Image 1 (cartoon, rainbow, N blue to C red):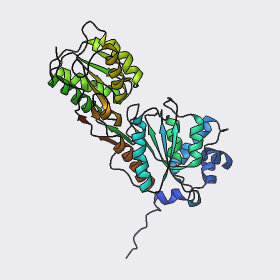
Image 2 (cartoon, rainbow, N blue to C red):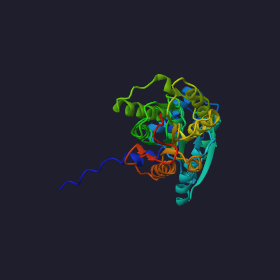
Image 3 (cartoon, one colour):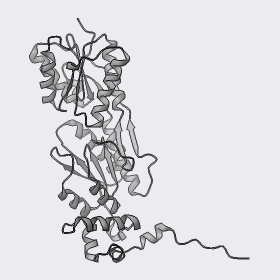
Length: 346
């Protein structure tokens, strides 16, 4: 009886045996050059770095156990200027604590893409994983993280979610639809929308939800009532005031986030317009301050804590070798009706 033929050693096992010297030979460079690439150091030409990273990806190089990832989750924000960010941090911190991990926080002061210094620092720290919030890592940065086996999860991506990059979001379109329908059901027909930058999918989806609700109700949209604003109080104040100065102002305003809605509150106060008697207002996010606004604000709840937790959990799963059952997860939004909406008085 012929003994069964043994299959070649599994690819995963062969890959673990690839050394820095082996990578150097395959890439046609020196071992120190490979080490510089692995550690995110400068001084390596771009084409050389890309060639080394391609070999690393192809052969699945893994560092020795002595160089295991640090027990931290790298959390990257484009800005930390509101309670929106704090809610996400709470979710990430909760999962990190449950897994005996620390959280390292980086703010990019409004920039969407981290700089070269951040990339080098992260590659040197080798965290358990990276959660990028409302940020855009370049293809090169994503490639560098992948070549070091550092999982990346994007939360509320600013670009179109890529299938190969795990991402967490919310049902923004449904939220915009529900908010606008609520106003229409109250009897409003002059319904304005303050959108955020439409190049961001989350803002565009909320605007599309508004448009869909108006179309379904057979209510024409006055172009003057749709404004693209900034996602801050100042934007809501400026564009809310402009809407209220129109010869035929809106009776209701739906905003892309709670900060804009807070600005609309102030614009109404300055114009002597009462909420909700003369103007209904709906925000988006359900940040803690909304229930204490005067009057308490109707808003669309975005599960920010849960979104942060989901992103951290996905990072932990990927780092432990699990393949997540999905690459894109959207958590449900919910309309929270308070006292800033009422039927129009005209």
